Image (cartoon, rainbow, N blue to C red; front, side, top):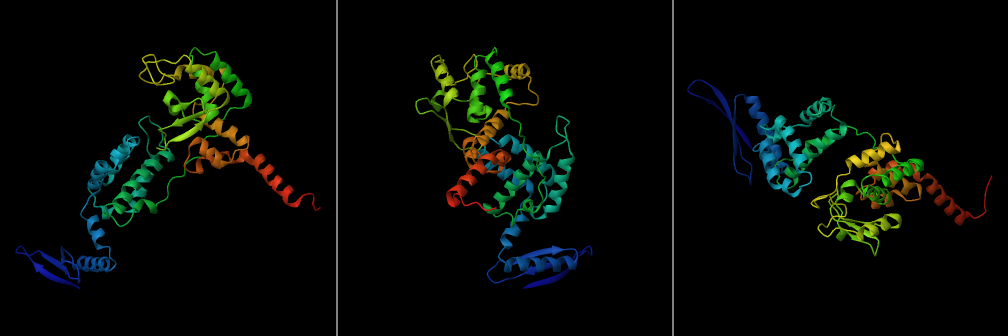
Length: 357
């Protein structure tokens, strides 16, 4: 139980000292200027002890957000090399807002205020910050609090979970029509770059990302089996990509004249890294007369062609290497004709010619 003792200092200052004794716990004491604050503290601490959460609450009043950032940077970031730079940028922002605050004092309302400031702010390029960017800032903060809660028991809850995330715009659905595809491939064949055509065909036929293609090594390709093993992907998981048809033939042709001073399939002149294709790509886009088309849209093109040729969203996700179906649901409307055929086949098998008017 709690006891409150009134104290008067030599200069006449009055304070109230709270002593809390609960069986099985060490005595807890604290001093306050006002008796009402002392009573509130006693009530809160006793409730936390009885609920079995006092230790975590105490930790949240022992560590600042700056302490949490330091520990996260030291223990967690080294395990995430691909996202380390971005997360450091996010952490610097959150630290500027919450650095000296005790973890117990960081509320969902305070995070909402920062969320709104981020949404109204501008990037270094003087562009309004997008909802997608703000979502990533919040994701970093959420992960920091989740680690503090689950692994270190520094906080009782993750305050980021209680707030609404900005709604991200629907992903691009730009893909090549048959006529556009033919124009682009002609332009790539006529390019000064000897590899641009092969790279573009590979992107359309496999749905691989630009970085995945440009960093391909001959050891990743099994021409006999017709497979490509992507060891490092955006999702940090390896995946096997089918290599068939024209794309396979192009790689077989390249393998006959491959350089022996590099393991890369598409190396630059020095062989120390991938060849730069920005200028040849831009020139091919202009020559083909394509508007609002980026290299990454070749990936959308592959997914759209898969959908229009009967692939399900699950199958598209497997080919593209998505962990969830959310990213491929944008192509679901293209599978309608395939879905109708499947439903029609099922009905014919079950009901046969039994049609009712």
